Image 1 (cartoon, rainbow, N blue to C red):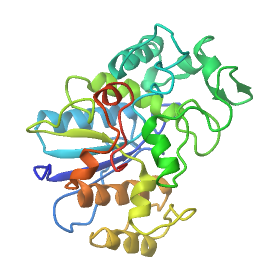
Image 2 (cartoon, rainbow, N blue to C red):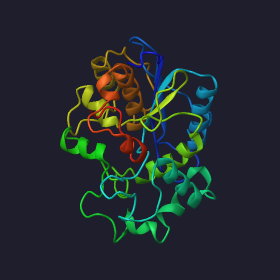
Image 3 (cartoon, one colour):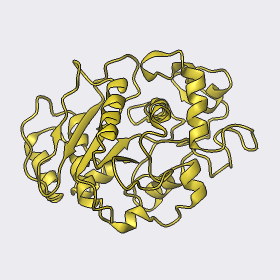
Length: 292
């Protein structure tokens, strides 16, 4: 299925403040066993705006690229029938959630979201540094249905998007990503919210730990920081050895490995039709590609 894709892109994302982000890495590969390679940023480092422009350029050129974004496109919804408090009259689907986030943060540069997480009402739902909101769900925090599947069936360790604390926090990355998805809406489709297009690029959510597991890296060993280990992992995904890179940090190696994993599994029909993915979930929570 979806054999029309000829380019496979993985983008490791960042929610940090500022314009240039050391945490953003973009990797891509073509068909066959071609080694994935890093895409050189247009500036001294990638910015969220530059990544957006790069994706738009692929769309304008109608490049048949499958683009994986390492971020959550939505907050949990199914558990309460709402993104925030049960029974509230807030956004009812992902595009409406993105529009709300954008409305709160539109004056903030570089797709930042400090104004969102500091908002007096919204902050009650987030675990922040030295300030855990009274509506933050105890323990791990609220999870989307596909994240619960990752935790219970795949023995992964997803983080709640409402958690903004710790090395594994994904909240700010996902919220900044929602601003970018708002800007891309109508220009580049996102699976499974949108149908797979007949031409051009398609965005999917990825979780780099899934790629690491598929490459034979067990729990606690999902990060690659040397060339030999990276090549061994790439070989598990039927990819050729990579060209040397300047820094073997988690962002670069995650992106390289995930691009190879996307190519390897883009044709797996089960990943495009996971059990439990309903039209309502596709509209409200989305789904991580790779979760069956």
